[in-house]
Length: 257
Length: 257
DNA sequence: ATATTTGTGATTGATTGCAATCATTTATTG
DNA sequence: CAATAAATGATTGCAATCAATCACAAATAT
Image (cartoon, rainbow over the protein chains, first blue to last red):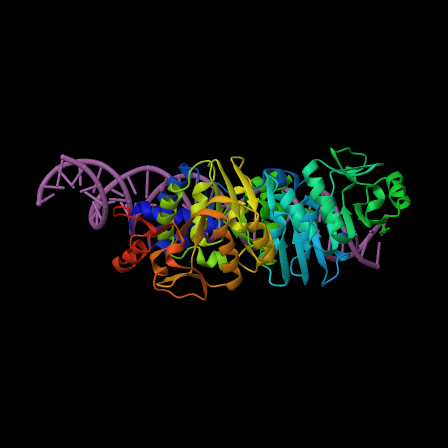
């Protein structure tokens, strides 16, 4: 085996595994640890990998969704608590439609392994379920909005027009007295098609979204069935939501509403 | 910050990053390295992470596609060479349809960053392009076949029926005198819809596929435009393909075509 | 409130890993 | 083919990291 070929193979192994230890690579390649170190030095110089004490991890191009991944850590504690409550609203055997928001993603993570039919227009959500044999997964096709991994547009809307689901979980970008908002006009159209396809709509939103304006109006306050929010929502917003006839579920230390 | 909360945050960081070094975790959490070690001991006991010298990598549940990932390393050298030749058949500005085969995936990897419109029914392929601003990506929706991340079935076929693309790249499971085969009946129907939607069909297949039977007949030998194969294809198969009027592209040390 | 349990940071000897070096082997070039 | 360059494995002293331990701090229980 040529040195160049071995380095190419090493890079592929590291790319597939994410992390590989130096002794195991030496064993697999049937060369000494010193040789592997030298190979890894070269991969590190090329920027493909990063050496660690006793190992190496992949540092080259990794498909990622910057917009999605930047927003995932925001208010993570709140999102996680909201997701735990929202997941209790889903019943085994449901057909559930999950949108591409980061709070919805936390819900999705908790649904993996449950006996469900999942429909989604989100690549990250789809990736969660694709390997899972307990879940039937249907992906809504369409134009993939750059950096978010969300499918929207006419193909998506047409497919949603011929689907029916029990429950939809939607994230929102903002809530005002006039209703729920997201930042993208095309996305909102696709989300409206989701609501049409659904018996019940569950909105998941952390408290920082309340009183925050966003570009595109999704629907009125009363057009949804359930709202799950963390316990830092104000009393004022709580009463507005309840007055709109929405079932309010609070996530956190206090009693759930 | 409570110890339990810190450990939960650590797990999330490790999950997001794949690998994290102990000094950087200690710095971010504002605790000593000794404390981080103890935390990581607990994560390792729980099976969520694996300690390394000076660091930790994520070892918990990771969405994966076993069927796809098991087959990816097979004949990797051949696939890679085939992909390099196939990528030269794609022109910038093309609309190209990529199926869910592992050889097609290697082609896809080489197309990232090119100015293209990409249509695909494969989650792994979609994940490659979703973050890329040079590429317009359209995902074919439908039922996600378990463990492969490939969308197929009536929704997929209907969407393909309303699309037109310049070139399609297809992997196959087997080639006999009677033509090209894949292992799944539903998948073959979706792939036939892909061929119908395309001006030109490019099949990518490593030489081990020739003379190998597979369940579902895709099309006759002459129904495609280009075949890209590694240089270990036999002279017998070469002449059969050429006699069928297919443009043969050989990948490897010898002269192409 | 006090008593008990759990968690933390620092220290120290033990363990793991590393890079420089050199003799030898392998690959490449003319 | 011989000459040259590149690569390899082993050795050795050095560097980095570790786990056990202890005194103290923080959290929890009564």
